[in-house]
Image (cartoon, rainbow, N blue to C red; front, side, top):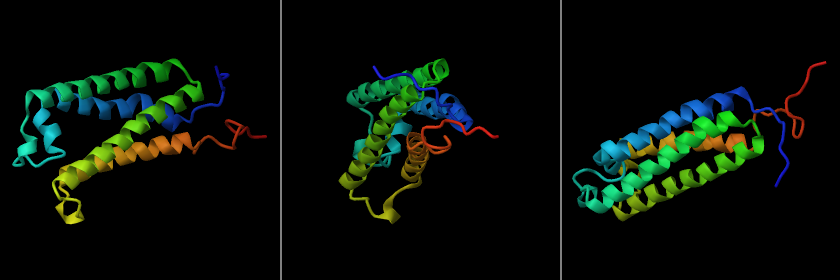
Length: 159
């Protein structure tokens, strides 16, 4: 087991990850459970045959909603419970993997519909990419140590 690190987590991340990021995930959980047609239309136009909700879609969307709720729980409680930067980094890296999977699945969906050209991408898809991209960039900045001060020194003290 790696030793705990006492590097202070910058306030932006202490606010963003346990407070703002869970609200974004909560919207995903809400749509997955209660408005699956909105979730499906974020990848497929409602006129497309693939956008029709089937029992298989419902099952998968409810599993996705459950994953969102699990992540929300960890964001709200685990990240408030510990200030161990290693735990935070492990958690953010695991969620970053999911962000990458979302981008990959969006690409696959657009390719299957022959809509990879910029002019064929709809506002719904741009919105999904923008929100996920913004949060992924924040995760990457956190993992890269941006805002932590000098490497290995935690917060720099003034003389």
